[in-house]
Image (cartoon, rainbow, N blue to C red; front, side, top):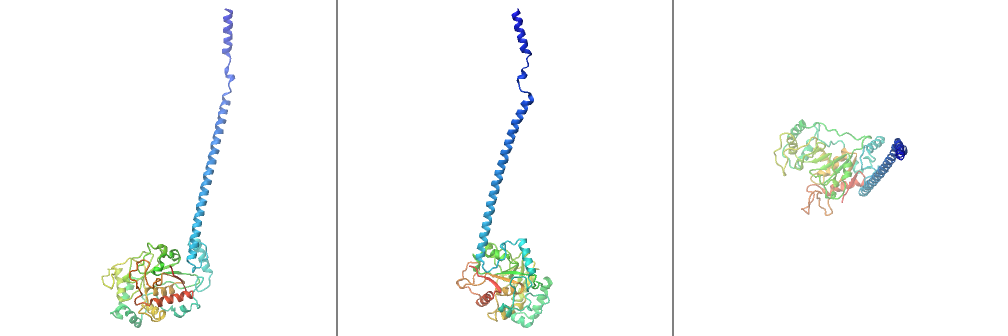
Length: 391
């Protein structure tokens, strides 16, 4: 019995013993676990930061390489353009990017220039052919106040055998300016202005020239007849300020382009009136558009056409070509003239950049093409105009 009691006493002693004393306190355990979690979290965060930094560095490197590639390409393009256009004096390395910063710099330079215009080279007495031929008293554009003499009318009516008389002509002009603005004001040259113009002919030598960007850089771009732009942008540009035409070569225009009509007969003036009103139904040597879309319209003065023929061409040929008269027009309204797409091809044919030549003996008809080009060449030699001869 004593033995049994002793055993029970020992068992009871052990049952009273708190085994929790052998275990770490609960808060220490939690602290230990929290420390482990914190270290793990910090490791994860650090790893994430390093990963993000690596990704950002990679993106930055890619962007730098991409920008360098773009800059290299732009530099290559500019070098090619400078080689292509040695005639064009470029002052700003970013001249091809007509940004507002470039334009502000150009305007500041113009303001500081005290010459007759704001360009680096203005027309002057050194331009011998220009000074001997240019006559600013001749109004390039017809207006309600234009006083055309009967002598000039008689010269003009012989261009395409006009049958109607001077009285009929004056009545038609009066009707014309019931529709269109009676006064034309393009502004006069002054020291604060440098109006640059691109006169774009239709010669095949424009093909492959890559003149498009240089043409579009000018303030005014003058194009001829129905010569297309779409599909030829790299060579001829996209901008058109004035579209020179006559009824047989007419085309619809957007709102930013002026129609400049070269009238060769009274019917041409009548066509312009009706093409904007009731519709024209007459006939000519080629099909005519009954109506036309355009909202800025100018008409060349017949006196200006005679002046181009008698003074500039010294009466050679039956009458000047549209291209030649447009060149003379540019000398009257621009401060700096750049000429593209003029002249015959290497075989002497006067073919167009937008057509496949079928007539291997294509000349200039009643126009003295070779003489006109010689005058253009003389103007270029005297630095009066910049001539770009293309391919």
